[in-house]
Image (cartoon, rainbow, N blue to C red; front, side):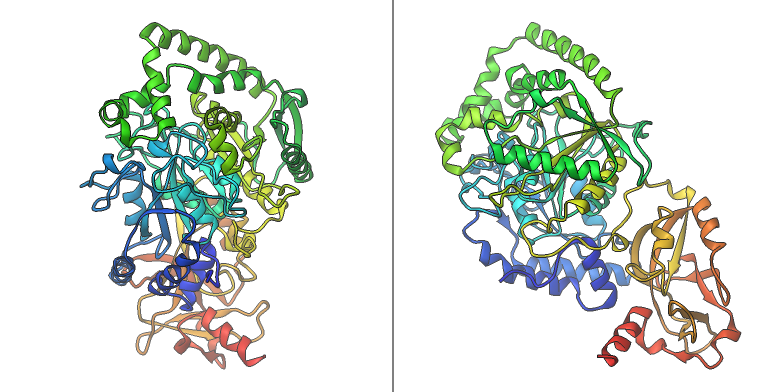
Length: 612
């Protein structure tokens, strides 16, 4: 049966902080839910439950030892063209399978942050396709209608998130593989700026263009994962060392110029329902403050055609061509045909294509001057499995109409759930911006996702309230931030949390103080607040959340703290000293000591139960 709770990061983090869930319970519940999806070949290698349970127990031990785990107990899956040590990598080709000794750079950062690895997911073989059907392990079907394709090539990763079996997953995106499946399954697909997330440990498709992508239930979760993964990797020759954001994107909550292809250039391949859904999504964008601006889409579409109709396909041959030539029977016929076509191109063709691409970029610059963000359908239509089987190449090419140009033009993109089609299928919208505008794009995407009022993936759960999700503002350097421990009404989801989120503060983790504190319910405070006191004897460890904010934001925040509360220095269970809320001793006279509850949330839960 499906899970009885959402796996979005805010819901899990709060449940962990309150003690209503633990990572091993979440693992148990996920494995109980997996059999309900046995008819959909999501997994290529699902780890045994006992192995993931052992991971959960190890994570508990790491936290108890004081490790900082920003993704504590968050379950995730990995597309099976990305290495995880000790788990086979097949790229959906059993004959190609190998056992990696080293975990991909991006995955290792997630594991170090406390995330729970569940297993490897299905894909179009060698990440060649946007359909999700080119796999000997079976064709994944759509999470909403089994007659329709899931999209690819990151098919299993997208469906696993949409079905509510993992909190997030990793895909790869060269031509749209991290966006098309997101659009078809009502989830978020974050395609980062090329080079910002290391691709070391990824089976190459087009090595100069490949990106590791994120599938998640909402934009905040996708951005949080992106923030953990990103970082310069000197061992990745395509890693980007300069990731400073470009200027020009709007500030949070402000209006912005949203480019849209001219009406005559919008292509839906005869699908009127797809057209109507996109027009409805544009109405939502306009309603949230977007100034819709028609642009000339021709240079973008010209660049898109070059990816598969130009010499870049030779990169696929460079990656796996030798294997394909030696194992023809082991390779999907369509994939084999695409990779074999690379031999038609020579060095002169490659240079001529690069010149044409430069011309397209220059023409695109004229269009970018008119807009902050470009909005396009994630895909112009949605095909059935039967339709793809009849015409695999042309229909796949159609699906890349709005995606293939993005990496060639060095852009970032975010596929976001939009207004559903009349037939009940999802119809996503992709937002696109210049390089290194990933965070600003996610802020706009989050606003659009909420305004569209759609559920999380194929689950029945709604988006968590904004106060519970992590802000998507760019992360400051640690040296430019103050870490603040909050203990009461400023906790996630509580009445004063907005004083943090509106200042761009970001949630780091839920943790505990060192033993040595008492917690009191202060009488007559509105909203209700606790008071934390340091004591010499009889102290306990109290639950807190750690939030990071800039020095400027911290200064304005402290100015609002009313007596008898004050900001002092707290000692955490791991021995760190951080700024945090303390209470004047005179204020606890006559106040109820609630220390035995271990934290303010637990006390509130008891109070709520007593009033029922």
